[in-house]
Amino acid sequence: MTRSSLINKTRRRHPLIHLLCVVALFSAFVFLLQSYFFSGSQRIGNVSREDVETLNSFQSSVQQCVANRGLGLTAHIVDHCKLIMKFPEGTNSTWYNAQFKIYEPLEYTYDMCEAVLLWEQYRNMTTVLTREYLDVRPDGWLEYAAKRIAQLGADKCYNRSLCEENLNMVLPGRAPFHPRQFRTCAVVGNSGDLLKTEFGEEIDSHDAVIRDNEAPVNDKYAKHVGLKRDFRLGVRGVARNMVAVLNGSSDEVLIIKSLTHRDFNAMIKQIPNPVYLFQGIVLRRGAKGTGMKSVELALSMCDIVDIYGFTVDPGYTEWTRYFSEPKKGHNPLQGRAYYQLLECLGVIRIHSPMRSQRKQDWSDIPSREMIRKAHSAAFRLKKNQGDDLGQFSSCKVWGKVDPSAPLPVSGSPDMSETRKKSNYNKWETLPIESLRKEARDHYQAMEGVSLYKMDGNKLDDLVCIRHSDSSSV
Image (tube, rainbow, N blue to C red):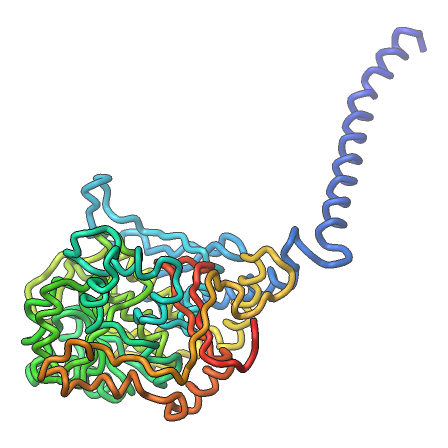
């Protein structure tokens, strides 16, 4: 072999040697990564492998639930937290967004870890504005109270007496309602699809029934929506009609979704019904979702939440109400996808015309134990900690009140003759000892602490108020 041919052969070998070296280095790099992530502590970054497996299993269970119950919806897993809800191709997208000049999409992405944390948190929450909350929240009276009063004429309560005068009739000293106070609750929406069923007796069989805004309750619609009326969540625009809507139902509790104002105060003096302000809403122009807030209210009081009249079945072409002409509402597809997700998170149970045709046993919804494990895993992941930080780790502000200290009953400083017959005492002076056992046990498990949201749906922004000396934080 000549010298030149030997040199050429050697040159041809060099690329092969280089390739083998690259492969060896890459294999070593992958081995080191695997050793870092999976050896010893079995962690992926700051998250344990066991937690990731728990969340993956939970996602698979939710995916199967959607396949069984979604009426055409499907769930597609992206990772241990992200999931995409998709409608079938050809779904009629009826909601037009004038701002972006597009129809609503046929798929929506959700963070399941945040969703299970948020909705399980509502099971421990207080969702009514109280005097103790304003006392404990930083600048509660000066700044926040002013945000809950329309037509105040100032951006802050520089005159606290004036703000108290506006809020007294709707401001209990402590939370009038408690987690797990009721076993079953029905949240009744206003959808026209209620007229396709006869859920009336079933709705009335619940321990408590929650209705929205001006939805009528009378013999005309009784077989469709029932007659029982315990709570009503309303926006401030319904004040002018509320006396007629309540129509002598003196025990029905009215909860105002956003702000109180002069019209409401004038209306309140005409009725004996207890009236409160909802706590935990995003205070901004155009905030929507009375139905969703009703679910939040129900979850803060009830073990089981059944929803009716939320237009979740496919095939409709317009937003209808059972008692009036069609009205423009919220994004139908987005709402339907999210409510289906909530059902498969164990938050609600959906009742609708299409679902009424089949046996409802909810056995394909993840078990409470699986949801509890997923919640713990998501909690550690979002907190970026290996250990469970406890049930009060989201408390940003702490306060303490004497549970035996007397507090004024709502409206007592300006109680009209009508309001003197109000049923406030049924709720505001109700001792914990008189609640059902599950509610008493929950109160003990929470160490006598009430949890309030600061604003909106922030997970780590809670005001926590202790009512007992059973333990310290």
